[in-house]
Amino acid sequence: SFVVSLLGTSMVVRHLGLRRALRVFPVLLLLAVLLASVLPNLWVLFFSISFLKALTYALNEPAKELLYMPTSESIKFKAKAWIDVFGARLAKALGSTITNSAKDQPQLLVDYGSVPSLLISLALLG
Image (tube, rainbow, N blue to C red; front, side, top):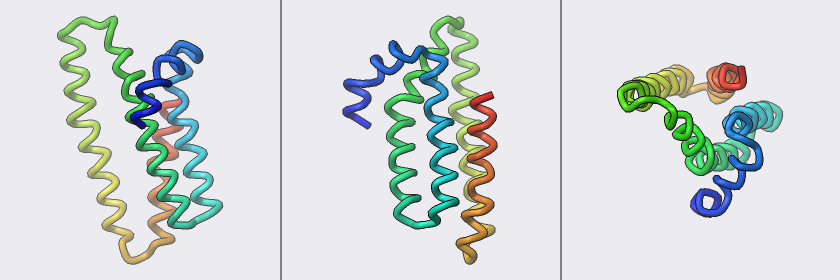
């Protein structure tokens, strides 16, 4: 994540453009969910989550911050506060609810745990 942030984020955004750079994460999230459903292995999930988390910090967050540049300070403050606080907390609460409800059934967790990721990635692509 550090190396990509240092060397590759600006290059990717310049080469692909902001709109396409923001679409990289949802596409890779869809691929990770599909790969995890085809190969339901703990190592596949571990490497997929590690890669996606690194990509979030290296590319998705900086590209998302670029979207705030043309807005006023007031709108930037309100939008960032809502997204960073409420949106993130809501997503974590949803993930915790799914994990807790299927904690004794790993296959159920894989099946239902991937649904929010699919929906969110499709919404982001839309």
